[in-house]
Length: 99
Length: 139
Image (cartoon, rainbow over all chains, first blue to last red; front, top):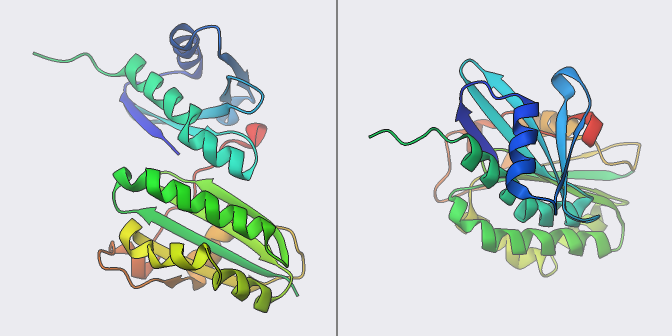
């Protein structure tokens, strides 16, 4: 399961907006659950899905990205769409380089 | 009585994921097709740890799976892949797969560690964190 930790407190809504902006129209990003159980679902096709939930810890946010689906398809999604979603989150919220 | 088998494998190097992944899928698919299998599942955990759980009608059928290819060859490569490799099995009345937190409790309480060339400190103590799962709303 890809995990991304970034500085600062990032909300689920901010993550959803960033994913929609960067992944484009071929991906559907929806919010599910509420409170601590709230999570995002990212869908590229019926078989290619991933979920994102996050932990706030002080001044850092950790995103847990899981592949969706059942058993083998979930394993494949861990390897595919989940890695892409994690990379997109990292790119969106990475701290700007300091010089 | 059904037998439950749980494994937790942690990659010693994330760069090994590609080759490990191929073996992991092969082992799960083999389990699903094996005589006596009642269910199989896998979970990609944080920190490059992968869990599997299988349920079997009888212990000897589970052993037949363990002793056949491709599982037999894959298990010989665990030392190459892992710095943590732990297994637990138990009998239970229900054939249903346990949830991951139950699997974690059994593994940390009664698991057996593989002998590895490059083990982490936790490999013998089984001081593993509970697996990270998606919220129930998305499971």
